[in-house]
Length: 185
Image 1 (cartoon, helix red, strand yellow):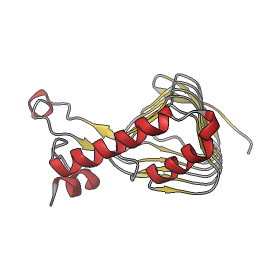
Image 2 (tube, rainbow, N blue to C red):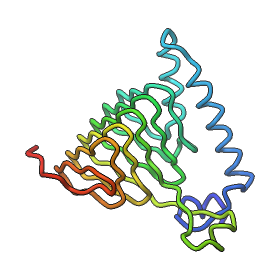
Image 3 (cartoon, rainbow, N blue to C red):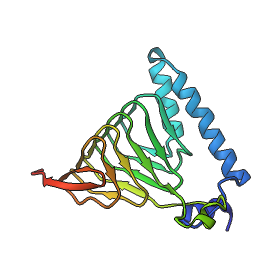
Image 4 (cartoon, one colour):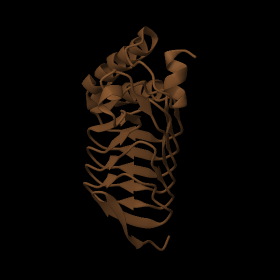
């Protein structure tokens, strides 16, 4: 397996591999370009977002600045809005459903590191996928941790840290995020 194959499968991999590094640098250059384009050239900027994101449906609306690792591991449904300073560490697949709103400073992480110091200090890392259902609103400053699945019709409170899966039609908040109540969708 190549280091990229390992990365995409969730195995430990070397993030400094030349192929992976080149792809990450290419994405960063495109992101820098996107983030520097003003509102008067929004149509052009939006076209670059579609170039960056691997699989995006209609009505993708991202307010820069925006950050990600690769872009090609992000899949976005229809009518998705991401406000200022969203950051997606897409080392592995990130699936975002239809009608999803991400408030400012939402962070979605797939990248993670071993808990054991010796393994962590090796410089190798791994990732776990993230999935966000349809009709979801994630409040400002929320962090979605590696391996989390968020169901349909969910609201995540501002500042929450989501460390475990969240079922459909609930409001969850806190650190770590807990279900506060159900939502009648």
